[in-house]
Length: 217
Image 1 (tube, rainbow, N blue to C red):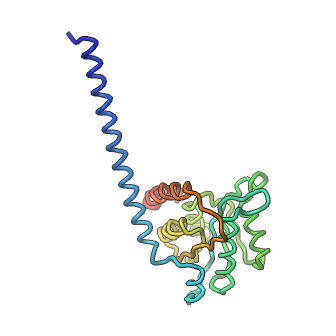
Image 2 (cartoon, rainbow, N blue to C red):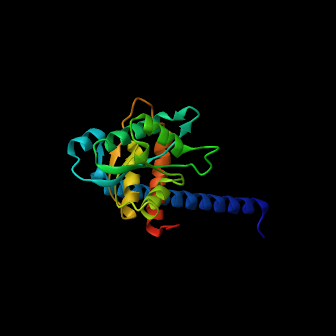
Image 3 (spheres, rainbow, N blue to C red):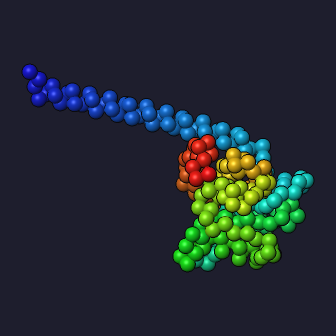
């Protein structure tokens, strides 16, 4: 008959085994996520350039300049978003595209209007209002590229966003059949938080899976 002491020993062994299995699965998941990141960055890398490189070598015409949204503050675009918009305006002024597509979260514009703030900023940068199209339901990078292709009929594009984000954005656009290049937004001096890199690491894995199965497509 098993004593209480023996039961405790058996219980501890089971807990240790479960813990080891969970660690093993966690490490496998992390490795898989890392491989997905390498693949996404590798596939998109040849298509990404700085603004200066793009301006020096632009030799194609595109349907649109797509600029991805991010945080809007009470007084307008956050520094990160402002730099994306300045870069998008500079890209557009090369004459390389028909219009700028601003995409972000304006699902409830009375509470939070990302694309409205983006549009106003671009107008202040000298972009005609008639050359700005807003997608108020670009709630994620994946959805922005899905909608750019499916709703706005974008076939070719210059994708403008922050450096850590541009690879995934270009990758997503390619997976929806948009022939695109990416331009890294200038950085006017703000510090990118470590959180952004961790979040992007996970998001690349998520979009790798989403662009295979295309939920909502």
